[in-house]
Amino acid sequence: MRTQIESLLLSEVSLPGQYIGGELGSIVKPKDSVKGRLCFAFPDVYTIGMSNYGLQLLYALMNRRPDWACERAFAPYPDMEKALRKHKLPLYSLETFSPLSEFDVLGFSLQYELTFTNVLTMLDLGGVPLHCADRTMSDPLVIAGGPSASNPEPMSDFIDLFIIGDGEEALPAVCDFWLEMKGDGRQQTANLDGRQQTADGSREARRQALLETAREFPFVAVPQFYSVPSPPGRGLGWGQTGKSPHPSPLPKGEGTVVATLPKGEGTICPRPTEPGVPEIVCPARVENIDAFEPPILRIVPTVECVQDRVAIEIMRGCPGRCKFCISTVQKRPIRTRSPESIARIAKESCLATGSNEVSLLSLSTSDYPQFEELMTKLREELCPLNVSVSVPSLRVNHQLSDVMRQLTTERTSGLTLAPEAALDEMRRRIGKPITNEHLLAGCESAFNNGFNRVKMYFMCGFPEETNADIDGIVELSAAVSRMGRKIRGKSVTVIANVSNFVPKPHTPWERLGMATQGYFLNAHDELRLRSKRTGIALKYHDMETSLLEALLCRGDRRLGRVIERAWQLGARLDSWSDYFRGDCWEQAIAETGTDVNKIVHEPVPDDAELPWGYVRF
Image (cartoon, rainbow, N blue to C red; front, side, top):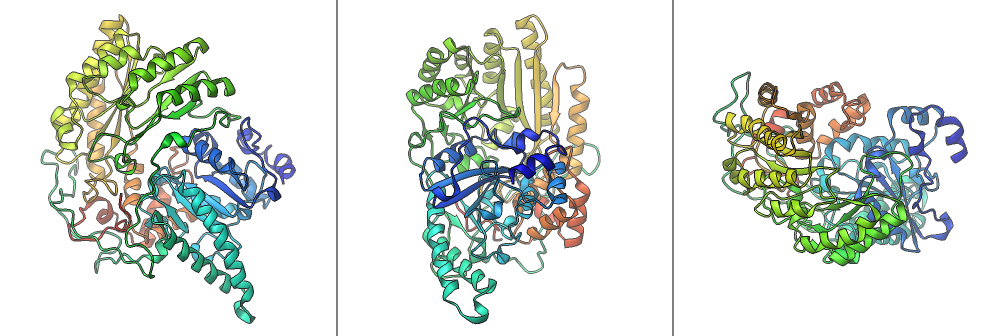
């Protein structure tokens, strides 16, 4: 098949290097040398997927086993999809050019809700039946994990099972168990006679195998074995409209939010439909992340990727309790990798790959308990190699100034902070107890230590947000810009990146409604107006895709009809502005009668059941 791909397709597509494999660090095992084959399917393009730390880690862990082979596939660009369909060729893995339908397990990493239609593209191109109900024992087990798997319902028509939590131990366990079930299922089908010894019998055997898998693992969610009833007349939304939590809306347009802060947690009663299926799915947790070492020779991409550096997770979990943050909930409890291990992996990986930058990964890197010791060890090992260290997530607190003095190798990539809100009072409200005093002191220390670039992440659309909170984003950013110019004696780069608040499942604000389109339009206009001639670079997330993100993360299983219809109409690569087609989603929403206002903007009553209620972190 590789010959066909190279001769027929690569002359017809852009950036062909992302479709041919063969990278330094990739692992190719003969098909007949292993018992099981897993394809790690990343539902975004190669340049994004190859920057994902989880892909590199799980790929290495599965391939360290002699009985399993792990290969990779990525979502194709539209020109590649068109070429594959034109020549009637399937989507394939990069290691052995095998069609996705030939694998035992097909594993998707759901990092973002706007990649959902890419999953359908990959299944369809790979020759795998789109719907779970149509698959037999001869088809791959289709699984998913990652942040957006925490609400399995919207994708439950297409994903057989979801692994909730950490994957280092859970993924191999599920793969091994499925091989056992696959053997048993084939035997069951073979024992049937007459009409039953067909696809119908194989589908029933598959259902039984999935049922046994759901019973075996407390961290596995198989949505077909759960029934989450909806209140009568709810449609595809909730049930009531509350008072806006924005008492001082911006002055233009509709500008208000149809939502209210819930007063209680409510009662959630998941409904298993089969005996032995757990009422509550609990996340898999790895106790010691040091026991699962990332590859020294990671896969070195053949084309330029978004993050082209050695990434090392130094800590999993976050001591913060931000009310909007799903990652804090999903990654608990805090677990750390030792400084000695981090420094060794960093040095050996740079020598093996030729990389000149190491990125320390954590939700809050400066909260790593041995941060000073770690930075000392990294300087000792990496400075002689001219390797810089990137620390992309720093907590704004009283220690920030000291941290800046330690980051002598990070100046080229700049300082990245996430104050989220511009005023201290709003930060206290959202559960992020940091102050502008500490933020400005940290920026001052950064400029004094040679930094010329600061990026700050904010959100708009928080409950009870006022005009002062919106204006404060520009005022705080401008103050940092003025400080940098004064200290450095020249203009510095200050970027204010503003995203739109989406109430995520499993967070303390999961029952809250999202701000309306009119509110965000007004907020963005206000930010643009006030940022003129301030010397700051203002960026904000597209409002339309933020609203779609809210719809996809908060819906129930009936949302699968919307996803599938949008895909049929041409929705592809929705997270890319160049390819996003809002018209496809608008038509799909209209055709399915989906009430976006109820799902996205109205609060969830305290006594209403949540679609994701059978998953608990």
